[in-house]
Image (cartoon, rainbow, N blue to C red):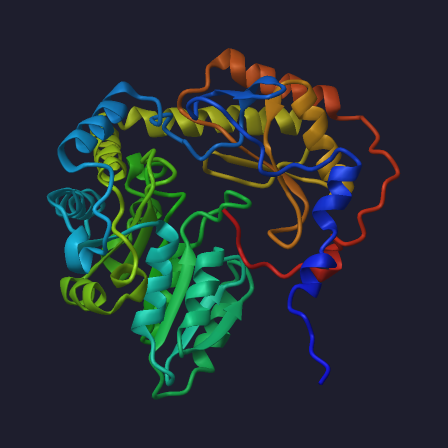
Amino acid sequence: MVTTDIFERCQSYTEARAAQAVGLYAYFTVFEGSDTTVARTSAGDVLMCGSNNYLGLTSDPRVRAAAQMAVEEFGSSRTGSRLLNGNTSLHEELERELADFLGMPSALLFPTGYQANLGVIASLLSRDDVVIIDREAHASVYDGCGLSPGRVRRFAHNDMEDLERRLANCPSDAGRLVVVDGVYSMAGDLCPLPETVRLCQKYGARLLVDDAHGLGVLAEGRGTSAHFGVTEQVDLITVTFSKSLASIGGAVLGPKHVIEYLRHHARSLIFSAAAPPASLAAAQAALRILRAEPWLCRQALENASFVHRELGALGYEPLPSETPIVCVPLDGVVPTLFTWHSLLERGVYVNAVIPPAASSRLRASFTAAHTPEQLKTAVAAFAAVRDLTPPDWSLEDWSPEDYVAEGAR
C-alpha cells in the first residue's frame, strides 16, 4: 500500500532557509531585557520601533509591582480552567473594570485575545448562520470562523458596498454576524464603523469589533467604537492585553446574557488554563494607569504622526494611519527584507511583513515612551537606506501573486 508521509511537506518547506542563506531572515530575533524603546540583542542595542507596547507600560514600575504582588498572593498559576479551579478575584475585578472603562454591560476574560475571538465566533454561530468578515481581519477571526459551523463570507477591505451586497445576499432566515477589526494592524487604518453599524442594523446583523489595536490608543484609550461615538450600537468588542495593557490575555465585552452564554459555551475558555495571576494584575495596573493618564494615548499618536510626516517628506509613501502604526509598502519580498536588514544595521528595528501575512511592507510602531531624539534617529535611518539598491537575489517562494490575506499581528 502506497502512503503519503505527512512530514514530506515539512522537508519541502524552504522559505526560511532561503532567507537565512542570504542573511535576510527577519524573524524570531532573540531579545533580552524589558520591552522598552531600546532593545538588547546579541548584535547590540537597537532602537525598538516594532513593538505593540503603545503606552510604554511594560517596564512601568507600577505594572511590575502589581505583577510581583500577584505572584506572592496567588502563586505563579492556577493550573486549571476558569470553569473549574482557575477563576480568581483578579479575573472578576478586571472584567468589571474593563466593562466600565469601555462602556459595555459585561465582560469575559480569556487566556489570550486570540482565544477570545476563537471562543466567541465558534460558540455563537450555528450551521444555518452566516458570518461576514473583512478580508483583512486578523488570523484569529479566520480561525474562529474555521471552528464555527456557520457559513463564511468575506468582503473587500473596508468596502461598504461589498459588505452590503454580502448582507443582502444572506438567506432571509439566516442569523448574521459581521466581524471587523477596529484598527487593522498591518496598515494602521480604521474600520468605517458608523457605516458598518448602519448596514448591520439595516440587515439585522450583529456586529463584533476586534479592537486589539484600538484599546489604549483611540478616544483616550476607549478604542475605535468610542472614537466614532458608536459604542452603544456595537454588539460585541474583543480586546487583547498584549498591546497597550502591557500583559497577556484577552476579553469579550457585550450584553450580559450573551456573556453568560459564552462563559458556559466558549471552548477556548472552558478547556484552557486560566491566565496567570501576574498577567491579570499587570493588565489591571496598566488599565488603571491608562484611565488616570490619558495623555499617554495622545503622545503615542503624536509620535507616530511625526514619523509618518517625515517619511513622506523623504519620498516614502506610508499608508494612511490615525494610529501608532506606520507602514511603508515596498516592492517585493527581497526589497522588504533588505531594507529591514539595512535599518537593523543602523540600529533601528522594525517589522518586516511579507506574504502571506500581508503584501510586502515595513511595519513600524511608535509608543508614548519614544523620545524626540529617538524619533529623529529612526527617521535618519530611513533616510540613510532610502536609495540603497537590493541585491539581485531571488526568493520565489514568496510570490505576491499567491497572497491571500488572513491577518497577522
